[in-house]
Image 1 (tube, one colour):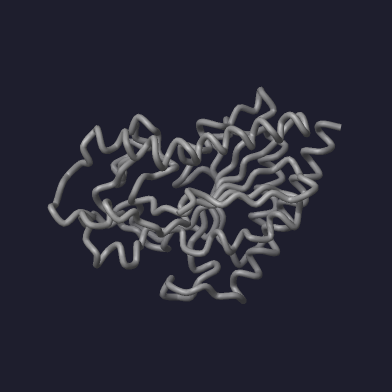
Image 2 (cartoon, rainbow, N blue to C red; image 1 turned 30 degrees about the vertical axis):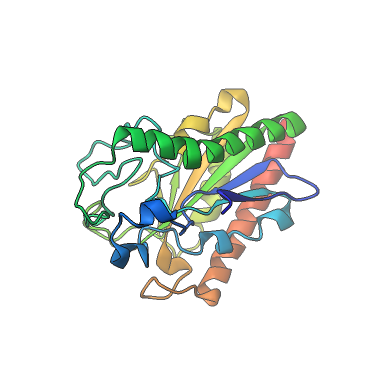
Length: 270
């Protein structure tokens, strides 16, 4: 099983689109230790986000999508397991032992994955994805002089262990405007907030995960943005099936946003 799929267009725009949480695969040795009633439908998956963004290469953007479940190892967590937030919300680990609702993932009820096993999974499943991110970032910077990494996520409307009320439809994260240049942030905010049928939030309640924070270095012409969205934007009301009608509206919004971001990046570097 490949650890990720990489889709590179012939003529590349200076944007890398990353989908780290769409994977559903469990290696046999890990699956054997987990609760099969949970792994049969790993609910914390960013379902169909790879499908939602599959237009990216047609706009010249590079697309990378993960194959393994975030319950094997979370590609958007700090490799040293440092928490991203300290406000009392549930924080799942680099190698989680619970889902977002606090259900234990392992049949033996373990509270943590042993450190040796965490290191093994980092080497096998985590490091290759991040090595490819770094390769693509460097390639795009060499080709264009600048680049943007757009990290794609989705979440159920209601996750009471994180937030008591439902999430906004669209949440743009840029580590409190430190991971990306202001002109690019303005483009994204303008395009994502103009639809009055969608609720929009900036850096609340998500500021961007490890990928956004680690790779965002605007002073080096290396920018990152994270878009979190409620799953009902492109799935059915039960948040289990892809809804093409809803998805197409979001895809059109995303295409407009990316087109303007590409134009802004190109002008800035021209």
